[in-house]
Image (cartoon, rainbow, N blue to C red):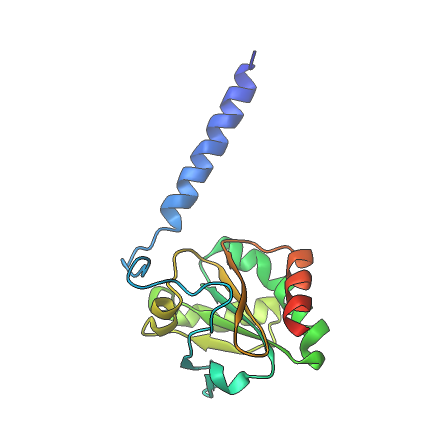
Length: 180
């Protein structure tokens, strides 16, 4: 038999889960699920070209020959915040072997002024791209933040991870797979 304290704890956990669902909902009705087939394992990653916070432009297809982690995130997203230190650590460990992280802020549903403090707070050194017009959000059918796509040197999606935060061990395993 459950004690009153346990029942209250379970109710509290349920309320936290419902609150997270509400807070992480697509407030701009910008979810693109169902419009076309979602990018998935074994298929060529949809190409895109986006500006970085440094004013450069990065095109995914120009990175062929490198293993790429595309991480879709926003500054307001708690799981995104939680996984960034592990992504930065893995990036620093593997960048000399041809690994790159493209952290794509869903700027169309985020506050761009929050990005520089976020980057500084987490000491991020990989490129931060700005999806101001939902180009990548549409192409990759953003359903939930964070969403991560592990792409081989040939440009093929090897793994898709929806939600987070991703653990360092999961990141390491997936990165080693795409570096083969």
